[in-house]
Length: 139
Length: 139
Image (cartoon, rainbow over all chains, first blue to last red):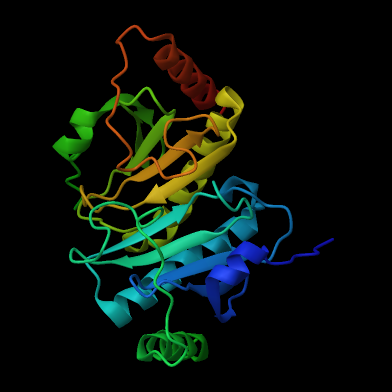
């Protein structure tokens, strides 16, 4: 019943982070913002309202957990959460650490300028991957 | 413990719709987009992650219910959900019916152009208020 495959546009514009109970967590490949994308491994979903009740509850927990992880790692001024899907319809949820000094503040990150890809050896990438591993091993 | 009061900036830029179990539902006063704002009646919250576990579950249900209501009333191309708080920190969640022909598509609505206030007698306002009443009485 579940032939989930990641939309290639999400795959190309983001980097692997790890698997949560419901969602694949990925790092948006834009070093301007600490930005996680959660993609529930369910085929054919577009909006949050398409999730079954128990999946919706998992999704909510994973949004909260990733928010708390970003708060711990970056101490941002705000966490932005969004499910839009205007460009890539496959259901995915953005969880972004925002700073009053960031390139898009106080506007939204979506559509703001052009992504600035991470260097493969970026310490920022290592920082978030380490935090994710610590988070996973604490569960 | 709970001295909730609506941020005056939200009060001024939106119109009353009704009260859900956790949140006040308001209509963003911008006739370009069918746009509901949910404000949980809890003092001092900024992010979704600040909600207690049972409130977070209620919040999620209310987002889903308002999404489904907008889908029923407007048959939009997409529902956008966002919790940003970059300008007004008081926790509020946007639930917006989006159309491929709308003024901001495929970009986000936040920061896109200037709001176009509803006429007090707008049939659009009546339509959404009727839908909300029907939704409430069906609970």
